[in-house]
Image (tube, rainbow, N blue to C red; front, side):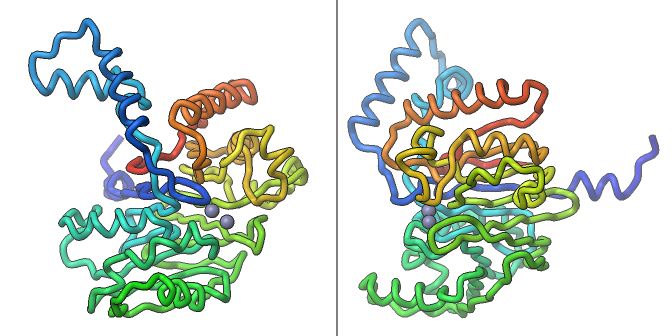
Length: 333
Ligand SMILES: [Zn+2]
Ligand SMILES: [Zn+2]
């Protein structure tokens, strides 16, 4: 087949999700006992191996050690960066936005290229504290010359950010040019190089999902959303919103038992509903998000394995992969 310039352009399209914060409701730090348990697991797994140099150790850690022995599902509340646009794009401003900001300060421009303006677009799912609490520690907000546009469908965005700033007791003046752009649920926009769609979600006080599309690639960010019985219908409105997404980042805070009984109407969904909606929508890669902060890595690993088994049971032929988000995860699409 002859080489077409369009092929080159297609191959050159780069869209990526970087997870800076993945916990739901409140941060969850690892403590000394957690670290010790990981050390014990790693040392047990290393028995019988001979490491001649650091590279052998890296290979062992990267290829043989289970995630529970080498990583941590994470500390921070919601913040996901969508790379590949013409400006910075962040979904939510939970405590993960502080790590994003530290990364910038350390000189890694998070995929930036020279000469791009320091313009940060923050798409807010809603105003619950776990989605805005990192903003007082977002250093670009204190830098003259940077611009921040907060996009969302909640009319109270400006007052929520001002209130939080006032009551955070931070003796610093916001120096960035900060503006708030109201979006209408169900409407479509072109922002920062992405075509963006919005949807109203089932959550106390409402939340909003975003679909980012660029050159045929798509990432959907849909957190803090409870899917009820009507989700079984063929005309369920989220099926169209999720349709054929390359990556669906979806609220799956609970296992089915908790979501359906004790925590009904709390505004979150289960891993089971997430799998079913993903498969029915033709999603390629599902990423469970808004992780329950009270459960440890071993339990989260079991949760992920159980979800993958359910995906196979539900539709063996589905090619949809299933991941569980953790701070530091990067997914290229
Ligand atoms: Zn939340
Ligand atoms: Zn919420």
